[in-house]
Amino acid sequence: MGAGSKNKARVAEKVANEQEGTVVKSQVCIVAAGVCVLAAVAATVPAATIVTSSNQTFIGKIVEETPTHIVIRTESGTVTVPLVTIAMIERDADPKKRGIVPERIQPADAPKAFGRAKAAVAKGDWVSAGSLLAGLLELPGTSFPHENRLAATAALATCYLQVKDAEGAAKAFTQRAALVAGESNKQRLLATAEAIENANTLMGLTIDGKTVSSYDEAITIAMIWKVKQLLAEAREIGAKATKLNNLEKLDEAGKRIAAKLGEADLYSPGFSVTNREAALTSLADNIIQAARKAVQICTAERIANISPYWKTGGTSLKHAMRYNNYTRNYLERRMAAEDGLKNLKTFATKAQTPGIYAKRAEIAPLLKQLDALQYHAKILGMPSADMPSVQPPRIRLIVIGSQFK
Image 1 (spheres, helix red, strand yellow):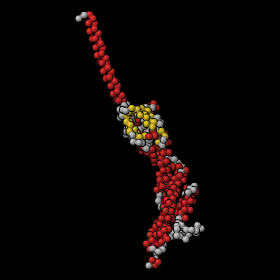
Image 2 (spheres, one colour; image 1 turned 135 degrees about the horizontal axis):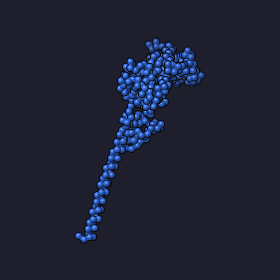
Image 3 (tube, one colour; image 1 turned 45 degrees about the vertical axis):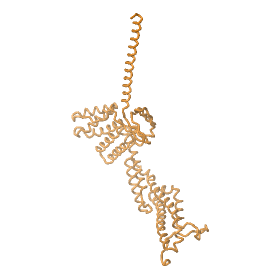
């Protein structure tokens, strides 16, 4: 082989080696890229599930939360979900974030552990402080005295609130309720636990739209929440009350509302006085709604059945009996509505809340309509049909007797 041929062979071999190296490097890069992709996928291991009001589900890792939206990184990309469209969020436990777990503490070490817990609270190390406090509260009373338990439950509640653990915070308030003296103190603490159990954890931990992050803050906000709940319950009593055309029944409903509203004074002294009219308005709403319905039904019934059958009831026993069946129900309904409205005026004066009657402009027109419904409709064939000034006959039952023999 000549020198030229040998040089060509060397060049060819070098090119082949370089191509082989390129292929190997490419394969390494592909493998590395695959590892990167796998790492990226691993980084988006589902940490939360978001369900929207339109029943769409997004599973992934929440990477951003704002007052208007949540950004979730899913295996199919990053999605921005408006907060107003979110129906539910389920958050998986983050393995990197350790929650409050009661620490095992020997009785003899209680004083030192309590000191460490205080120091952790001062530093804002809520998990460490909470774990120590929860552990101390599991000790017998001889090892951890009552006064320290009171302080521990309050501090523990704050620790749970800081880490947004509603269940733990509610438990801490319930524990404290068992320790305090006085029934009123117990009830206020249990109301706080109830409010926290019903807290919104969609964005942090909020009660009635207000963020809760400390023991004192929780009690203040919970008291407002509780009185609103009691006011709603009082109004529900009024909304569901029946037979309000009977003044005695109306008075009974008023007393039940007052008693429920009185419970609120434990949480906000004087609340029952300032909100008495707001609660009793539910009775007025109930009575007025019933009167409107009665007017609507009686108006239609009078035209469809009452007056037509009255015209023919004098000559037909069958029609007279049918007229009486319709009329009996009609008269009872009309009278019940009228009595309900008149009772409301009496009740409002007696309950010292005249506004629940005087402020309702719709009552006077309703009474006028009910008064008109005492009389037959002006239909063709009646003596008053063509004479506007003549009052139609009053609606009464037909006395069935010898006229049909």
